[in-house]
Image (cartoon, rainbow, N blue to C red; front, side, top):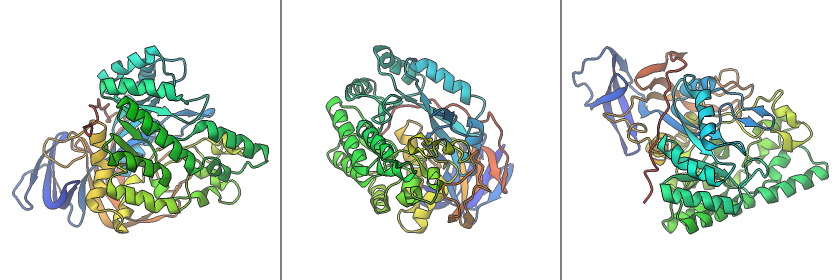
Length: 461
């Protein structure tokens, strides 16, 4: 089956130009001059629309156990929702329980995802148990296309790693070329603040933000950067939310250190005020790191323009308000941490274009191209070019929509962006040449998505 997309504006990270895009089978076959005589089984007129590479969300948590429950989206529902929003690849986190092996964890995540995804997918590995065996298993994971390993400076007793354990994992990463991803918050200090708040009778959701101050994200980020400097390991800071943490990343990058960082739409558009909504409504916005005061948002947008923030992912980890978030009624520390968002990342980032915060090319770069390069999928993915996978989105920049739980496709009973009016909307989505979204309908199928075996970080110098 061949498809010709005519009359669109092709946008890559490197520039934009009017061109027609020919898809043959699972790949992009050619980029041709508009109007050039090309035959195809189907011709789509994309006049007035953008033709962009499919979005790549490199931070999701489908079916993830947390706090006695698990995230509401399965790999089937989560990847279907992602497709509706113009994302054609996710990289999910396989969670190593303490006392288990990395390889058995990888097998478990394959059993969850394989045959159940609507779009392509890969894995990162969460290391929660640093031992001689797990460090050795990092090599086997890399051989199987999983070469990024997340660690936590937060959540003592669950995921927390000591500085010594982090140092050992970073040494292995330096040896193998893998990338260490870091949740950078000072969990030891945070736990003390949480205990003090609860002892004082302060149990409302806003306390989640107040007991995880931005200074403790900045401190942990700085400490992770120094450990990476000592070991020579590359470092990727996940879900950066605070100006203090961004300052530390910027300073390290200015010296040429291989430090990278992502932020998330919730930190660009939501704030501590949402955590302080009346009653228990703030529980909908509980995630870690927490939402920050609004003044941090301008720093994050600036970081995206300067490339000190290189990627925008969602940290999609949905828990239903009813039954799941409500586990923390009266005790904010028991509210499952996470928010839904995989469906709306591309649209929310497009608002940055509409408002003049970023260019169209930068939109594509942070949503698709840089994630592909950072996590070893480029040029298979992340670009509209001959030979690339035909992960192609036709995007209508003039369409308007209102985000709502009544119309989204994620398996969660609320939207963190309820009532947001946005400009721009996905029109048509191809995943490896297969049309999965078109004419306001889903045409994909469970099991179409394939596991992506990833190469090493292409930005390492």
